[in-house]
Image 1 (tube, rainbow, N blue to C red):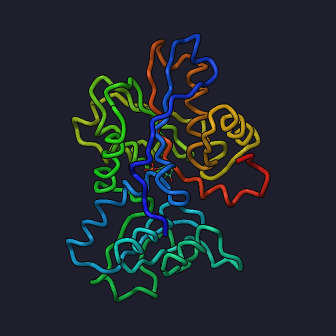
Image 2 (cartoon, rainbow, N blue to C red):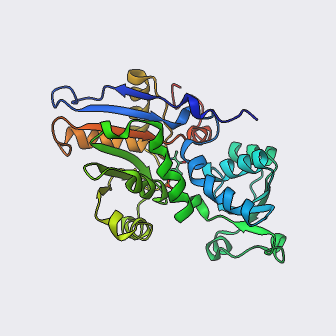
Length: 300
Ligand SMILES: *Cc1c(COP(=O)(O)O)cnc(C)c1O
């Protein structure tokens, strides 16, 4: 397995339509460069869970996710790197042909346990691992939780954060956004672009990760950029991602970062950022998710 290259993270300034006349600057924190397959932000979110599992002398990590989950693959890879047995509880019946993501997770040594959608919702350990709970360290789906937030707060250590007026990120479980809010300076505003539909529960999930002081910081959860819901997409999004790649040479994924860049661009066009803003967009990786699209959908 190729090792993780935290030293290769860069901050790239890019042009987006309408930024010049409004005197807005946009830079991208390239967490996608850490590893070609394993998503950028998931490492940050996993770090303190792994340390916690070690200190509790647990040898077996169990987590949850869908067939294309960046979190599943990152957990499998972390297990391989740090010497844990890993099991992934996968939503839905076992398909005839495993997705790219699951094949790779298996290659990294993860045991895959498929459960029906109804059973998945209960988040109870299935029979394969029942009775092992003494030795198991459970991690929530998507790394949601306080230790995930602590790790995500370290994302901004990879740039000069004081340069920026706004920090933009994609929001799934909201763990990364909570970490960015935690690490943000008082004058900065964190903007989360929701990639799922349920904005009410998303807001609650975010708030429950923040301390009272963090709740008083500046942040916005922007909705309306989910393109139909989690992992849904439309031609308009794919066209945007191809165009964005032509202009910036930055690849994006259709589940998270494509919607993120689309959303921030749209907000700039609609004058939702003041003149002279200096926006940092966190490219959180996730490019392996594009394997689920048919070939030639994307030009990169
Ligand atoms: C998981 C993921 C996110 C969302 O992070 P949350 O902490 O779940 O909100 C964003 N981008 C990518 C590429 C991801 O894999």
